[in-house]
Length: 116
Image (cartoon, rainbow, N blue to C red; front, side, top):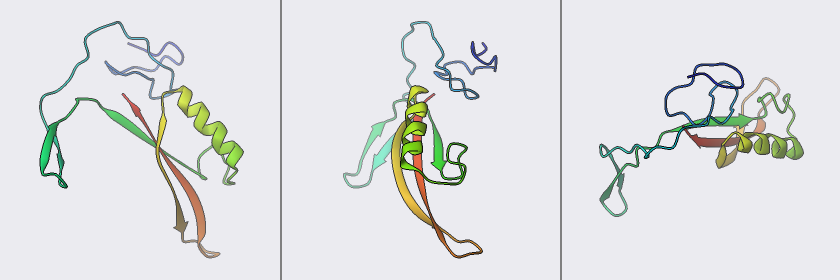
């Protein structure tokens, strides 16, 4: 199967094209789940079965093509809305001190996730 937008090969079961981000139409079928594996919660000493869902992640920073090296909250908003249309959701954000020749610089980092 190939992406209808860019023609790239699509892995079976993918919801989005990994090259261009286009949503992939899939025929209705029962969801596939796995009974193997478990998530362990150390605070309660309990294990729960995994859902069988798979995710991919994206890290958005000032080095991303959207920013051209300059942070701007309005551009960050545009970037996050564009990624949201491709199925991405924000799962975390932070600032980081990055060492450099002219001294450290702060950089804003956003972590995005979507189900594949």
